[in-house]
Image (cartoon, rainbow, N blue to C red; front, side, top):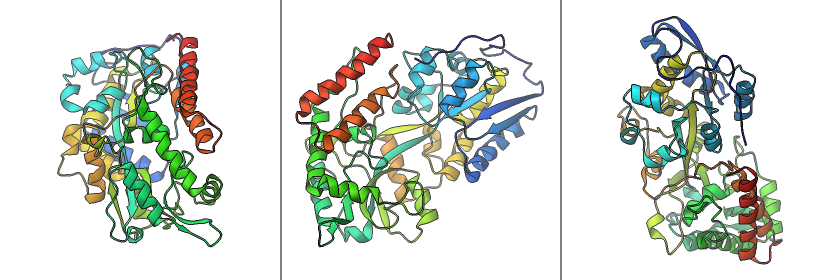
Length: 424
């Protein structure tokens, strides 16, 4: 369990710290590192400092959760910090690592129910405590190569995805894969359990907080489909092909190069294609879903960047003003979205006429807004549940698991044992 102790500099709550108009320099730690990404933040902050000339914001790129937690434990945290993952939200809130934003929201009269879509509201709070706010979002869908598809429409069901994968896959005379219709391997880039689960509506937890992976038939349905497609390729040939592919976040990404006809990916891939493969003819669509769950089609996995005020912030009120600006100001969010090509995380920003969007980006806005979209619920186990099922999926697709039902029950036992050790 993440934990931190109070320090002599701990402050918090609306109105604490220096006077509202006192000159202050506050620190903002972000995970982004690329020059264009940092510039996008500075552009959004420029509008903030124009409205608040007494506040100077110092941006530090390349911060991850470990660095943030270490700084808090050492009594020298940033005033504002952002994270790329929602996996630690439960611990951030439960252990008080990030301050409760409820009093700030109330004092500023921010109505999160009117401002934020449901899924975003869910992944920024735990047990009624909202300790972070969403700062842009990620939505996951299907990218497809129009030339390789040769007029085929994108699949809507898992059976259609399997059939089209077989049709589009090209092999060498010796059976090696030259072009893959779709890679079912859980080891391939964004094919994580979390991103795949919405395709069958698979649940992560029971109402009492214990793991539901072994008891929810949607997981068995998902993994059975996956294994059938892996076996059709041949696990050894699939692994040989996968390991010879280019890098995910580079110009030689296999989708860019026409080595993969259909791929699960996030909305940011649009910007990468524009930069690294501008001539690629491609389209986007929601991910296919279980044949018996057509109601799920149009939804997908949702997550995103979060931002909050760490415990021990020396300028909490100024920090909140910056957090409020970055997460509730429509123009600030649109500025960031247009530069970073992530989905805006508020309802007003999603409909802003200033938001740059074409048909391929609109797909992800629609997924983000869809009622069937979901995320991994905040939990004190953090990412442990995802790590366990991911490890199991690798063994399953490799043929090392003989009884799927019993294997999934074993996943439950590992997750629930960790929960007991954590005192959950």
